[in-house]
Amino acid sequence: MSKRAFTEGTEHTESTKQQSQNHAVIILASGLSQRLGEPKQLLVKNGEPLIIYMTRLAITTNPQAIVIVIPDNHRLIASTITELANQYPAVQIVVNSQADTGMAHSLRLGIETIAAFKSTSIERVLIMGVDQVLLDEPHLTALLADKQTIVASHYHSWQDLAKHQNLDKAVSDIIGLPLAINYKLLRQWQSELTGDKGLRHLIRGLPADQIGRVDNHQLSYDIDTPEHLAFAKQQGWLDS
Image (cartoon, rainbow, N blue to C red):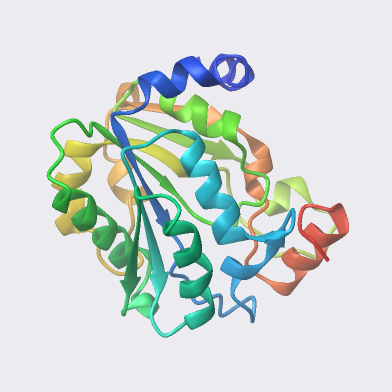
């Protein structure tokens, strides 16, 4: 199911877009990048900051709205994304003044912003981060093509894919972002999102037949540390 959707994503991009206008996107971009030592939102890929690159990917899915949650008191991030938002009315910027409390608060802000649109036709929400540097349009297309309650990305850890590198060790496979989720369910879960407790622990409580997954082990390569960044630049995934 998922592998078929992923491999056929390129060929069916246009038709999928026509079917996918019932969704909104939340881009979680309010992380403080404390382990990295510099804002990952402003790392450069193909000549543009990652926050712009990921927003453009979201735009390719033709959503009703894109909510980008950014950290407070960071003028460069704000000015970078505001320029793009001015070109696309569907893009809304939300400032998270409590970015240090964890991802859950950013997600809650995103949900509240979508709810304020009062659209009755939004059925699903695509949730993304900004630092999975090999994320591409076919993967997002595959997530939206599957109609299960939740369709999450599945990938290995840094440890599995780069044992020969001096990288941080992870302990297991990951079922996580980006993911597509039923909007009504997301609203129901909103009050349970606190601190670092995001969606993962809630997803684990669902029956297996309600959870789809799209395999894409390239998504293992997110950028959390200087070692990750150096590896990504060495591979040519980010600009030097």
